[in-house]
Image (cartoon, rainbow, N blue to C red; front, side, top):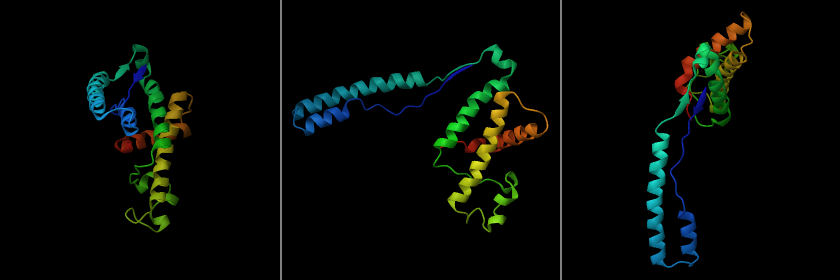
Length: 169
């Protein structure tokens, strides 16, 4: 399996360089306008090429990946979840009490979803992310026993499905 996905910002090329030259009076206003126009033209070309290249994501799934697609996909999903957990500082969705241990419920903390502070909501969300990650670690390692490990996998996959649309920053 080969997956390449990228999202890049727009290019600015030499704007800072041109601005600095102009501010330091190393180029005249005429040169400034001319260089800026050339830079604008180059940016249009670079952005058009980037957009065309990024229009298609490169994903290659071999027939061997299909023999155990759950295992193959678990590698990509696990890396994504780990990175998401590390980098997400913005989105903290509401997590249902039924998906958490009793000691993490709103009632146990004498609060409601609307009154709970961000730290408490984040703790609940981190718990769910940890469940997802633990499930995908077990699937990726392909070395779990049915019974306790199976319960972890089932619960983690349930959380992954339920909160899938919350995996955004």
